[in-house]
Length: 385
Image (cartoon, rainbow, N blue to C red; front, side, top):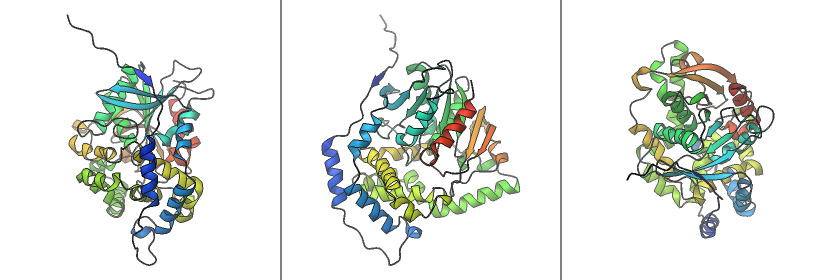
């Protein structure tokens, strides 16, 4: 007699790193041997040495990972086995408006679930509140890693299964930054009957470059290629040789911090202030350390990079058949100096853009930079539905 398949279930979970792992990280940071750098070296050669040294000093003398865990554990954390992978997520339930579709929040790299803690709290409270689900991507943090390479489209399928089969929602909104934007858009493309709308803060050139025909569209594409020629070494390595990058960074806490800090600084709002002063400030230093520590404490440095090669395995650039995402799409344009928002005319060739917002502040990580502005824009897009 056959047995009906069991519906996957969410289990309460308490994120807590092994103390032996934390002690090893602490020791590795304290014993780091600083290499010689050229006189006058700054951000133009990579991570600014003075800034990195200041952040590491903060790490050694003032940063408390257990305190960060405690704050995270004040929220309802869960694990659910989906597609053979344990997904870690935060599930905030609104006191009212249970009939409204929830909002799924998805981070990218080198972001993490921490990126959306404040945004999620704001969206789940007040008169316009609704349920919010924040997921750690496969291979990141407390989410398990796939057995094989997995790209953003395959990850979108897992997110859909989590929302519908595990949590029981018929419909949902999806928001993302960085990789989260790409995954959210795939949800809208592959699951339009369930994904009510997509809110994104980054447009991947991979999905729109081929449609650039108007002069301003071609100018934008040329500008991106020029910027990425300077900034994209990390992408080329993580896309072509992710294992090599993983070997180099998994057991090198200061190296990982430098690798991530360079991106936080390069992709931040240029109007926010001098990068050296900004990231030497205690709050900003703690933000980057916390983010790096999540990867280190969970042993997910290497597996977090698999998505880059996974993207290349999912097919040629663009959406299949030259189609576009037809569910309503909202784009919140930030002041990201590298992933500069494209002209709306170009974005509309791949997405059904129904809302376009110019955020007055914030860079590549608006969940960290301007959580209230981002939450307000997502809420306005979702409206009362």
